[in-house]
Image 1 (cartoon, rainbow, N blue to C red):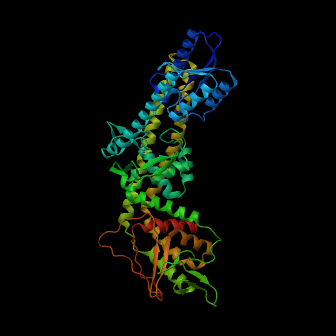
Image 2 (spheres, helix red, strand yellow):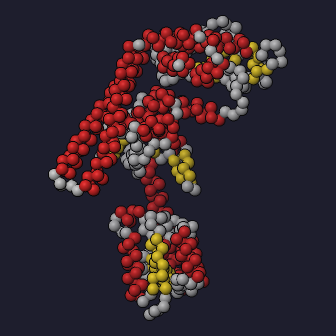
Length: 521
């Protein structure tokens, strides 16, 4: 028996094992008892709690252990089994070489392996190879089962997205968080900034599915997720070198799920995200011409303003197509007139207001119910404390978060009630909004260049100049699919004093209201 041998204890237990009760303390006691039975002195303990065994060489505890081997602080390492030391065959063999070169031993309690002997080295290599093979086989089987389970609509793993929950192995709406997910889309349509949406939600006391504050990145993921409109994606991403990448589209699995927002709302929000991304990529000086960056030749080339003559012109360098800046600005103004003064489908607009009113009332009812429930919990805790059934420490621990949430909900209720009032009044004032749109067109010539440019960037996709006509494509929010009896807009001739375009009306009211408020405030 080696009386003077000093050893270290290596402890690495996965999170799943800890959940099953296989604690690090259990492994430590087991190793200490073995060392004691051998008469060895435990000189160091190396703990790698909840760390992967795929590659352990880079961990600080590993480096410390190897330094202790080289310095002679320890001459052996005890661990529960080979898979706990490392699952990578190469690293296991590297450990064996290092320990052998330092005349130190590796002791695996489960396999009873002593790697200082030839027989132990051979057995060690075989076991390590089998451990890696097993790991790869498991990963392969899991990867193969993902698309199959996804097509069957079964749970793949991880947290359910905000607004949803798993019930009887089926993805269903979560009545508590679904209104929050819908509120995210409503707030984004209103403010058009992810950071603003996250800030508002956090101030109201809302939290993500994992209980953490919302971030602009998280808001972006939710807005882009088609699950909100009833399309659940699975098997569409993979990880390579620690980075998430998208798989080929043909490998994606898309199955229906309960929708939280209408498809047109999802499309409108994602269109804003796309336009914002495009604008953020734009570089260069501030535009000096009202329509610069939006005027395109029918050949596909961007047209630029040249000042070679007294009258500035947009010119295509490829096919030499040209049009004077004065003419195209006038045509754009007349197109704007048609854009804002199209006959509004008032019935559709009022239906949209009714839908929004119902949603706000649902949020209000939910907040009031939550406040009532919180009030009951507060009363119960107070009664328990008064009767002496719970002590002061427990009372304070349970009471404080409930009271804080109660105050947040109480502050939120007046805001929701105000929103209901505003929508109700807006419902009764739609004719006034139409007049605002007319005023916007009437005041166009007196507006500043910056105000006009803001409108151009807000509602313009592109202006295509042909030899005989001009096609002005305006972007409007929220989007809507035209009915079968609606004809596409006509394109104005290049020399026409009036625009002949007739865009769909029911959903233009939102844009006219937005622009009017932005300019008239």
